[in-house]
Amino acid sequence: MTVLFSPLGLACGTLYSAILLTRPARVVVITSPEAIPHLDSTLDAARLFHTHFEWESHVLDDAHSGFRESRVLAQILAGTAGQTNIVNLSGGATALLDCVRSIADILWREGREVREVAAIDRRDIFEQRREPFVLGELIEVPPL
Image 1 (cartoon, rainbow, N blue to C red):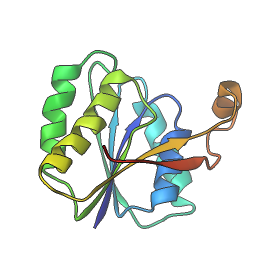
Image 2: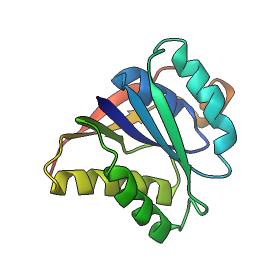
Image 3: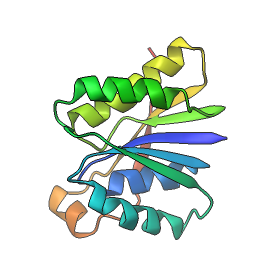
Image 4: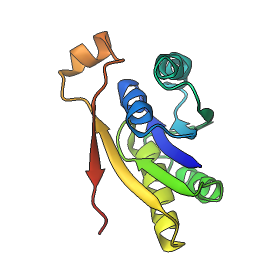
């Protein structure tokens, strides 16, 4: 099973693109109280083109400086990894990105299969907010 670990910030097109460009069987979303209202619409938009995926979400109380919380959550979520794992390193506030980065680090240390990517949208931020569900591009992040 392929698992996508991804943050969801206020620019929900990043998660949308990550789902469509990686086609995972399971999506694990790390988000904030401010961004969680955008989750359902983002998943609904992605399901128009990729219908077969399970999902779960985890909300960090402080998406900007909640590093203790993000590291604890990363330990827990790394334990739920699949056979193939994709970590999206774009699309959220600092602690959200720290969480997914930490998941990737844990999986690397354990010798698990992990692919790091960044889903990006090169459009102007106002255009992204006006029309968020436009497929972006996927950048492969090379391992160290």
